[in-house]
Each structure stands twice: as C-alpha cells, then as structure tokens.
Image 1 (cartoon, helix red, strand yellow):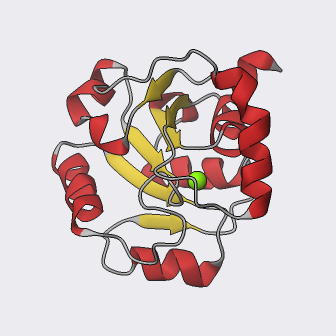
Image 2 (image 1 turned 120 degrees about the vertical axis):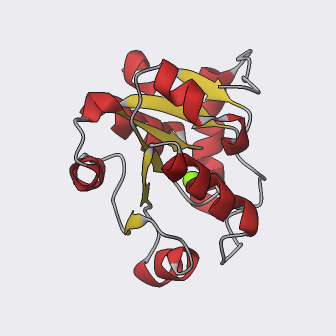
Length: 167
Ligand SMILES: [Mg+2]
C-alpha cells in the first residue's frame, strides 16, 4: 500500500513545473486536479496564471487535461475560458477518469503524469494506473470537512518530505 501512496515527486506549486522538466522525465501529457492544486477550493474561476500555465504547456508540446472529482457545474465553470479537455465527477482514485484523460491525449499512462494535492485520490489513482505522480502542496487549508479528515491521515506519509521548487 505504501508504494501506491508515494508520489514520484513532491512539488511546491504547480508553477514549479516546467515543460522542460516534464520532458526530461519522459512525460508528454499532464493531468491536473483543480481544487487546491490549480486554485483554492472555493475559487470558482481559473485565473490568468492558470491559463498562461496551460498555454505554455501546449506551446511546448505537452498535452493537458483536467480530471476532477468535483461536480459538473464547478468543473465547467472553471474550464470555460480554458482550452483544455476536462473530466468531472471522476471518482479518483478509481482508474476510469485517468484512463479517459490519457486516451483523450492519445498517450499511454506511462507517458503521462498527474499533478494533484491529495495522496488518497490524485496520487493513489495515478500510481494504480501506472502514470507518474506529482504531489502538489495544497494551496490552502480552507477545505471541506471530509478533506480535513484526509489531511490528518496523509500526515504520517508526508512527514519530513522536501518539496521541490523546480521540476
Ligand atoms: Mg484537490
């Protein structure tokens, strides 16, 4: 179980990730979580930084997709000005959402990475499908109750970890 809860990298922020860094690790496609990975949980819209990040990836030849466990309306609103494929109610850590996303990118799971802030959803599922897993430090801790419980459970796995500010 421990190995499925271990990401390939611990990363300070999504903005620590560069297309060159991904390519160096053989990653051609990046799947992104929304809540507390791209924006704080209660932020409804993507900001200009998120858009620039996705545009930069695209320009550099990295495919992107959004895979979120959130509801359709939340994900649709967030993505409405972004040029990105998205999958809502993905039921991470179950495999289906990840597999649909890699398929949409025309890649195999081993050519893709998931970047997300939760060990028991984003990282566990990514490891189960055999993609690279990048754990992003949560943007803030203003989160719904069930997520707070999961944060407590994550704690022992995260103790003493160093987060990279460049990947
Ligand atoms: Mg999240």
